Length: 347
Image (cartoon, rainbow, N blue to C red; front, side, top):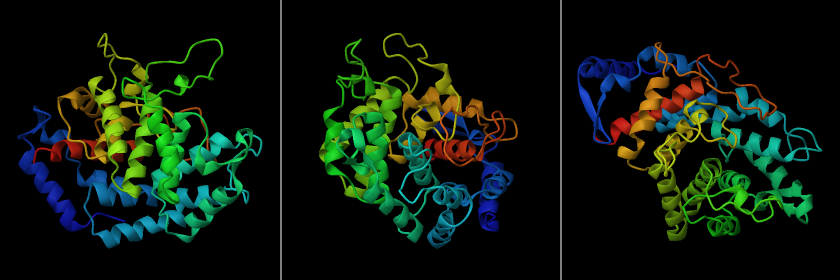
């Protein structure tokens, strides 16, 4: 699938017109060519898996809705989505039957990231297996989609359930009740994490992004809720007040690994994941994202592509991009749509 000639012409014209012009983003001058991809970038991105192609068509090339829907429908039958669906056991889990919980969670999140259409026959079969057959045995056989105890896991389960099946109001309320005073969430705030140390009172970027993504998906499927919107706003401010990667107290970088981008992200936070969430949530970028946007721009290679900086140790029964240091279509897609979000905010 290639971009239409009209799309290529518009992009090329924008590049020529904007080569020596600046655009204001978060009250800072941003060079137009720091954002605008070339037609060759589109061609490279579209020469890939359906899970990437349909998102490029939606987020970067503004294709017609019917063309986007047709491409998205292929996720269930071709490429990575079809491979991952085929790896699900008849009992609903992925991975080792003795240690299926995290492999299953990660597989479901990747299917959601690929954009598997919940209305397809394959998606309905997949989620019905989970709903009918998977339980957390140590929690009195609690159904999988009802969640477990840790907010970093429950945030993702909330998002998965809302996306593929139906919003879980009880799980959303549980997560709202676990929000900490500083606005975020932390799995180590749960009182029984460790008998050797008291529960944490500080939020975790990792847990917070997992919960925010889940609450956003819940609201998008369930409809607006004052309580959920308020909680998300507090969580978003937690990230933004820290410029997405800095200590609020010292101003120092909390973890330099967050400046390097990965996919799949699993439970791990990084700056690109944080920015992509803010874009998806419709947050208007301001000065608090300035440094984070600069990091995204600086991570780009001279060929206009973004590399896979990190490959996390978690595994799913699917190989996508594994060449650390090599060009990543996933990271390039996400970086370009984040920069487009920044650019379009002031047009």
